[in-house]
Image (cartoon, rainbow, N blue to C red; front, side, top):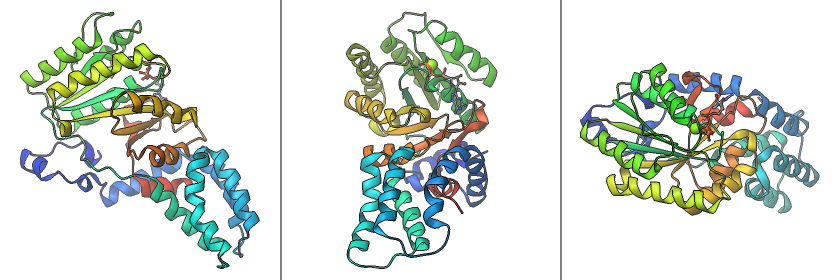
Length: 332
Ligand SMILES: Nc1nc2c(ncn2[C@@H]2O[C@H](COP(=O)(O)OP(=O)(O)OP(=O)(O)O)[C@@H](O)[C@H]2O)c(=O)[nH]1
Ligand SMILES: [Mg+2]
């Protein structure tokens, strides 16, 4: 089990104000790297196609190489803005007449890619009683599955966990969460379909406080980020949490499906406008070649990526580790 899921004693918890405490251990990094490598093979293939031509033999690179690389990185879901940010210093050096070999370019790209990924500034889970995680995102991105996976892992790590069925909109959503609850052995607070989600959250968090739950995971209905009313509803739900839990105690997590590539950017933009977003979970990284979107999201919105989903089972949710991630998707 990963360190991040293990319950810390109260003394350690208060010592744990530093986010570095969440850093994976050395042996965890090794295991993350091999899981990432396996799960991210499609993204790697796509990037490899982009990069091998430049890296195949060690030689001096030219302006034309960089132009070609730029075009390909943009297409590999890094997007325009992020690609420019990545290549700008390299282009500048080349235009100043510096010699850059393809080996050096590879090292600089690795460094540059690492720098695009923003480090968390807050510990995880957040320092709340209960620590409260609020999951938002468009339809079908994997919110409910991700909550269940986290519930299982944190429960196994010794936390007292409650899931709250804040999706009262989609038919079958409450039952879906309840089924997961039974499967992973974590209780679910739910009301009836059609109930006001803000009131479900109110009651759910209230129950968690009264009954000493340490971690609350709140599910919400998938919503099209372009629908005004749905985003207003989300604001109301977020305000309920703000009332109960101090700022350092909750985290609003945007769940994004990596398959959506650059569309994930416009989703993030809309959710960001509605409520504060503290971090991102990228799901379905297993089936896609678009994993490069991780760089675009993290860089553009200055958001840390907390976990990535590499499959449908609870053990397929992995803590994000940027060194392992970059190493796994770059050609050797
Ligand atoms: N391959 C793969 N499938 C995933 C992953 N995460 C979720 N899924 C699948 O994606 C589908 C949708 O997942 P849900 O958790 O229901 O998504 P949701 O965001 O809650 O959907 P709505 O509540 O309808 O908005 C399910 O079939 C999940 O099994 C992942 O990391 N990899
Ligand atoms: Mg759902």
